[in-house]
Length: 420
Image 1 (cartoon, rainbow, N blue to C red):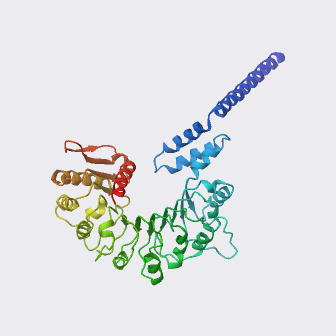
Image 2 (spheres, rainbow, N blue to C red; image 1 turned 30 degrees about the horizontal axis):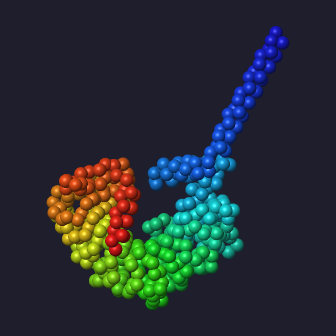
Image 3 (cartoon, rainbow, N blue to C red; image 1 turned 45 degrees about the vertical axis):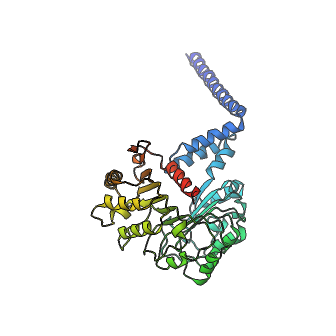
């Protein structure tokens, strides 16, 4: 009996050995196939995988790219895509590992960098800065085009204790003339923006607000400072802003973004004739009456071609007939080609999206102008319900559902920019 059991054991061992050899052979075959692929094909595979994810599913995208980075043949392309657009949480538990990776070569892949958590950990006595913004290798970021600095996220701009250290790092380390976009949504002083003197190619600038302090005003008023500036974003439009709006000569600024309006500008300065794009898509209701603010826009900015508006701004306009009010303001803009109504989160619900669609249907039914061609209804919490209401050759308005909102915005922003 014993020999029979031994024979079975031997058979099992032989079978297991054969299975392992088969697995190794299969793995070797797959590796061999990858090695025979042209490098451009490998790049295309990685790029296609990264592009297949929705912008809101960054976690799954990065997880899969990290898995690809473990493969020797895919690691270079996977790392390049993974670090192309990077959010760095200063002081976060992964911060040290990210910094080590950037210093070992990944920094050259970074094209867009968002630093968040900034200002929460002023470097304490005796504390290592290896996991904070203080050790970010800016000097190695030769491909950096977009730099955003937040405190706790995009919209947290209050209760901030100014820490000029990061601006000193940027002055000393950031390569010259590489930035196209800089976003800083916190209070600042003149010396904080000094590093931008070496960024003459900057096209898009977003700040907490326009300055009132003398040195900052003088810096922005100097035509040699940011001569290629095209877009200005303001987290807050304050009463003092209208004075500064008259003092930005020598730039072809054609795009303006306002997130919070605390006043109706007495004058729009250079923007009155130059603006072709106005972005109010994240603007909260204006305390003085949203309808009055929108009317001020359409009366003073006659050359708008792309007008982006938040649903909340419209919803609380206190107009008895919202559709009639909006239709009238859009008709006033005789060059307007496209408008976006954004139902953004937080602050809106599915019911708001339903109401928005109903209002836009009423607007297009009443609209008698000739220029407007398309309206995008965009929802932050229900992407599948995004749609455009567009005119076709027979002048009939039709819903296109669903709509790729990013492609739509890029198309009409490009059109509006080309006619500046």
